Length: 91
Image (cartoon, rainbow, N blue to C red; front, side):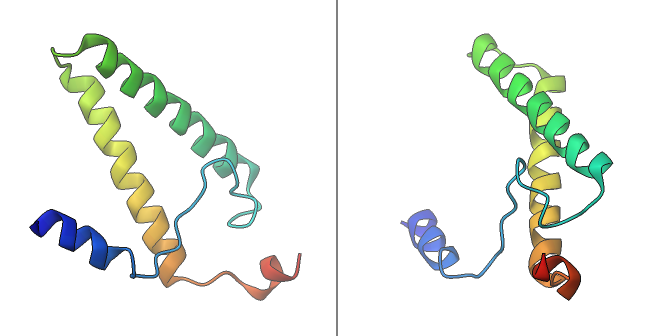
């Protein structure tokens, strides 16, 4: 019940989540966009590997999966707290 209520409250918090495939609105740097796409593919492969190995586990794949989760949260919070510049919004 506590988890359900916490998730219900969190649904009203205005966090601007990023889309790994659509970073053109966040940065013009091609290197960052390609890096995020590559990291997302690596995360997908690690998650698939964890599913393949289930019920066993692999600490390296778990570390990759949790690392991507933390990266995603940090970038989303950055996007929430630091507004886009007017130059990017006008495009």
